[in-house]
Amino acid sequence: MLAFVSSCGLSGIDGFAVSAEVNLTHGMPLFEIVGLPDASVKESRERVRAALKNSGYQFPAERLIVNLAPADLKKEGPAFDLPIALGTLACMGLIDQEALGGLCVFGELSLNGAVRPVRGALPMVISAMERGVRRFMLPADCAGEVSCIEGAQIFPVASLGEAVRHLTGEVPVEPIRPVDYQTLISRRQYAEDFCHVKGQAKAKRALEIAAAGGHCVLLIGTPGSGKTLMARCMPTILPDMTFEEALETTRIHSAAGIVPPSGLLTERPFRSPHHTASHASLVGGGPNALPGEISKAHNGVLRYCVTRYT
Image (cartoon, rainbow, N blue to C red; front, side, top):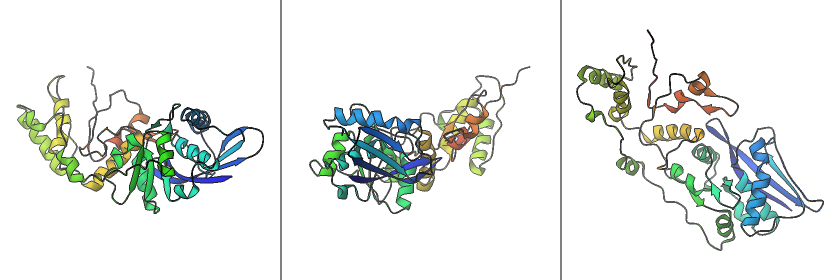
């Protein structure tokens, strides 16, 4: 029997469509994943096997082949655990294929069947919506960062069993209610505020001019004179991010896996890498193309300390 489950992969800060094609046939027991998977995707075999058994489902003792299409794009990360598991159950006849139609699924599975959050939920949802997808099933811990997406029907699940019961109609999962961006801004609280800085009139004036014109600032002084404090307070005098800017900034942070529990970023980011930070950590890139500190400071403030020895 053959089952199809729509999913999404992550490439940089953009998502791309992935179809998990699960085929169950008679033969010697085998569980193989093809379609240019990396090591973390290949390890899905053990996570899916354990998650199914510990959730009360029997893993099929037959020939199970999973193809992640398109096969010419490299698949990375554990986000395909949940679609592979649901596709397996669909091949066993426990889930109707029609229930999976038009639904984009992604999420990491724990060995006990819990659905863990994945990196890049927001860019994957945005990219899928650009292709016309409107229904999503994703980890409950990722619901916060996509709660402001209008027009998306998002079903957050905390376990494999909960996902199956929703698809079978036994216990439907309520879709999350969209949260207005202005409501999120009203809940915002700054850890440091520019109004708390006492004295330093000339430095504060320079930062105000820089904030108004988008200029760079060079702060020179002895350790403890307040350079870092004032830099940390600078986001509080910058204009509020628009909804488009907030989505763009959160998209970068989501791809880096550092989205706060509150979800969508409403405060302009402040990044302060150490002066010994490597070129790769500042610029980004690498085998998995993660954003660097410069990208993480997008629409915000980047403070870089240069230590001078005399």
